Image (cartoon, rainbow, N blue to C red; front, side):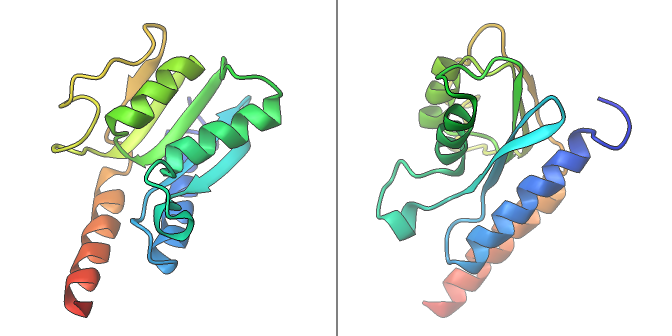
Length: 149
């Protein structure tokens, strides 16, 4: 994508969601879903608030986007997420048949790539968009969390 609405533009919107998570004591991961250069879903981690291990930003975004579109498939949609999805979220993305995934920071321990989890064969993947900003936010969160304990 070129112009105003490029991958960095939308990743900045996902980073805003990650900041909301940070402020609420959640692991700061944010996600948005875009269709036709329009944000149709915004989400961030809610695992602590909902006491639900499945309440990852991606899962919340998939549900919100499906509700917006009125269907279970996210064809012609892009998910922007600040951290590489885990295998649970990758599985949900597989079933949603999302057209494109763009993520920020790599998760070298629990990310779908290291876990060898497959996305839908038609899903295009791009990693590393504003990775430093996303990674810095995660590091800051865990440093603060350790200092409080």
